[in-house]
Amino acid sequence: MEDVVIKVGGMSCQGCVKNVTGALSATPGVASVAVSLEQGEARVSYDPAKVSANALRTVIEDAGFDAD
Image (cartoon, rainbow, N blue to C red; front, side, top):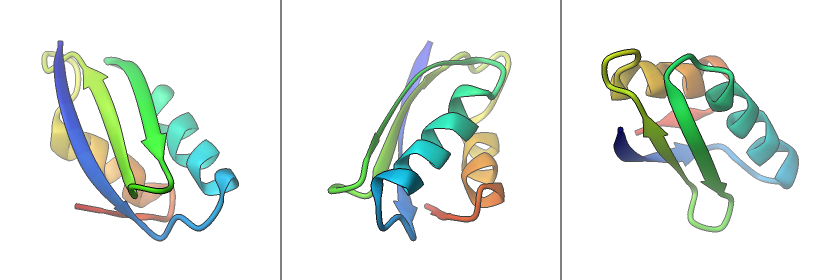
């Protein structure tokens, strides 16, 4: 497992946090997700053999948020 911290832009409420968490959690290869509204980031533990950090950024962007 590897861990990555992705800056997430555009979150304004706990509903946004729930959307980002749900999108990442549903991604194959993701073991755990912790999204912080206050820090504007998502901490993701994932299996690099199944998903890449760039793919995780794409999942966040597809959910309607900015990922950096």
